[in-house]
Length: 233
Ligand code: FES
Image (cartoon, rainbow, N blue to C red; front, side, top):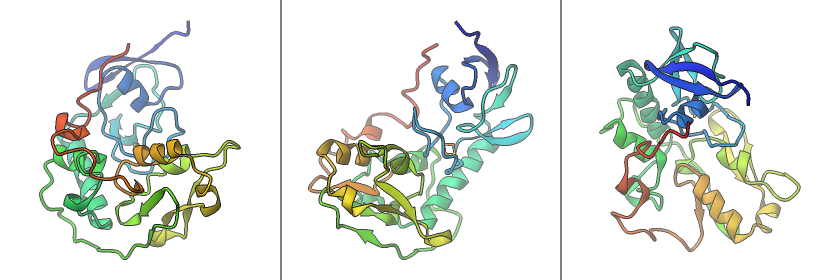
């Protein structure tokens, strides 16, 4: 069996496999590092920056940085929590997020992080960008007002030949997620369900489904985000 790498997170002794990222190893050791674009078993995108930690005085994204032997990682510090809160606020002002009317409310990871950081009103001005929605797929509704461009859908929803059903379209502040219409027409119910599930916000919605979990029974009604992380080592 390959020898484990020893490192610490906020002084807690942790162990990692060779080549494992800080975020993946933290989860295995029962340590929660907030994340939005990370999804187990997918190549990390490093796009949301919520998982910033500090290593040797430098900010690093935990989802893309491999663990080194003896590494000392800072995670749960006021500085990092403040940084993460400001990123959550920036995500809120750069889209159009109206939580009370969102089908994903209570199951939304961005909303859950806003609760975690006790965000009341973002400190940045709202941009209120104009975003196109796309209802043309038979099974999915694409609500780009809520998209945080995490690429989870691009990286995980693929057809049998490995082709992604989702892709980015346009550039800069016009960048948006796009669903291939031809491939979308062949989507199974399971794929549509999975696409909705892996979206951390309410940007990919299953048609004819919404508000089906009563308040009090939704994922983050029952537990705060990250509170279910348990050590598997
Ligand atoms: Fe690491 Fe998004 S989870 S950058």
